[in-house]
Length: 104
Image (cartoon, rainbow, N blue to C red; front, side, top):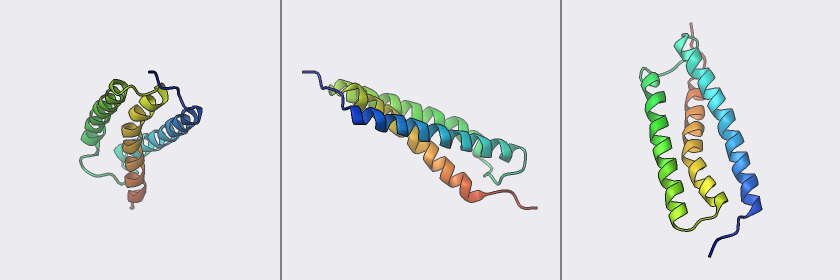
């Protein structure tokens, strides 16, 4: 039997995607400023920004696939795909924001 989508979950997915886009934009800005020497970033930040995308995409694909195989509804599948990417953008945004502008 096919599960019917929960319309409230579509709204929640849209909010999560919006937050992810805002966080991703801020992370990109902080990293670019770090490359320019204006933002305090760790020495492995350039490598991290490449490797974490692969990890998040693999997890998103796997999680969405698992929900699909369990018979999840489209909104549940989307939520499973969004969650790992949102977790990455949220943690990066918090981590880089704490580092702040480079001093001196």
